[in-house]
Each structure stands twice: as C-alpha cells, then as structure tokens.
Length: 152
Image (cartoon, rainbow, N blue to C red):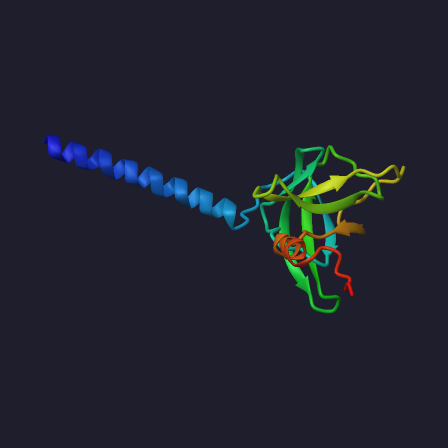
C-alpha cells in the first residue's frame, strides 16, 4: 500500500513539473496574452536577438512587449511589432534602440522619449530606430585595429 502512495505522489510531482515546463515553453515561443495596450511598428536594419516576448522598456521599467517580428523583403529590414501599455502615451518623435542588460545580459528594446506634443496612435511606426550592436564585430575591430584606416 505504501508503495502505491509513493508512486502516486511521484507521478503528481512529475505531472506538475511537466505543466510548468509547458508553461515556460509557451511564454518563450511568443504566446501572447490578452492586452489592454496598443501596437506600434518599428523597422530595423539589424533586428537581431529580438523576438516575441522581448521586453520594451522606458528608463529601465517594462512598458511593453515585442509581439511579432517579420522580414520585409522589399526593404531588407526586420519589422518588429510591439505592444505598449495603454496608459503610456508616447510622443511622435520617440526613438527606439535595441540594447542589452550589461555585457552578457538579455536584449530589450529601449524607448527614448521625445518632446513632441503629438502622440503616436495605434499601429503607427516609430521612425527613429537603431538596431542591435554586433558584439563580435566590436571585438574584431578592437583586436584587428579600431580605426579602420590604413597606416603607411
């Protein structure tokens, strides 16, 4: 009898762990919960390391999430759609940059607030953007020679 109880408890623990892993996997692949926010579009020349679920922050505080990323074959750009909290009204001249938390931290989209009186409307585009820096390129420039100009 005791063995059956132990097997049942172990089975329940395994089942709970499996449900937890499935939940984490659904968040990682971009499962989108219902949101009261509004969507904005950004076009990056280098949109690396941004995927659905990536944070959107202002001054270090999370204000939204990346909800989709696609490729525009006509302009050769990554098209990133973000969902911003409805309470946040962004000025029209807001800019966006893909950056990271420290040297090896997670990447996120940082919004830098402008001073325009008009605000962005749902599904409008943030036009002032800067893509992610490629760490390997920076290290290569440092090792090989930083200026890129030939010396005689």
